[in-house]
Length: 284
Ligand SMILES: Cc1cc2nc3c(=O)[nH]c(=O)nc-3n(C[C@H](O)[C@H](O)[C@H](O)COP(=O)(O)OP(=O)(O)OC[C@H]3O[C@@H](n4cnc5c(N)ncnc54)[C@H](O)[C@@H]3O)c2cc1C
Image (cartoon, rainbow, N blue to C red):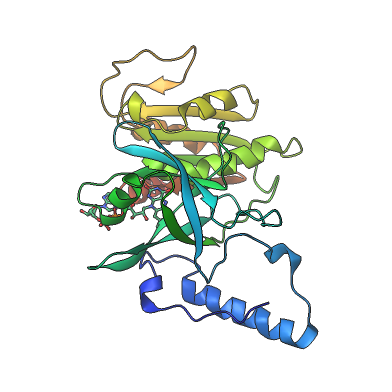
């Protein structure tokens, strides 16, 4: 085990992550100290991506999802046969290092793994923001370009059957962590957690992971609704739960019927979160 390198100030993405890169450094330092004493490493730490040092990944493919979104697939530059896998838990994020003459910074992105013909180590769903420095850089990457990543970070721990029900409200690329959590619950047939997902999007073209969510519809313990803020112009799939208007107070009120053993997850709805929390706490 190598002594961890202390992060620089620019390595922090300034998004208030928990744990922050500096907390991760402290933890890794403790692990290193105990390794020095015992000579043993934790095999669970084996990962092709590191929390403290940047690892190079090249772009395997970059797929245009229309409406300013891309799915970008990354593969390890070190392709030796003994290369470790890239491992993360649902809900974790990675940090991307952006380097230019004017600015060095990091930004957080959520890794996803979806079924696709290409082989890759991790994928990200990126929204291109107007004047967004890093999102535009990522969306403009070409196949074969090298990028630097650290991770995984996150403190969410999925415990099977801990809750009767998980209610998730996500918007835009906020579907990425939610999708990984849903997939893990549904793939575990001993996990009886019921999941309700409300996914808020602009229009049908911006519904990310649309086919994947639709394929989960057949699970007895998964129910989802996609709320669109624009008018519905395109055809939907058979019994696809598309609601052609914004999520509103009456939908939130329906959730009040679920009281015990409920866990709420809100992702990417920063402006709506205080409003929804207030509504849910009313009358309780
Ligand atoms: C834990 C975590 C996970 C994330 N996962 C993803 C992910 O999987 N995919 C993804 O696309 N993004 C994700 N993000 C957001 C990402 O880290 C960047 O903030 C985003 O790509 C914008 O960076 P930028 O450098 O392009 O924009 P900046 O140059 O920082 O900002 C440029 C302009 O864009 C606006 N802007 C920036 N971010 C947002 C926003 N979120 N909503 C509205 N306007 C915004 C700013 O107000 C500004 O006007 C995640 C963030 C966090 C904290």
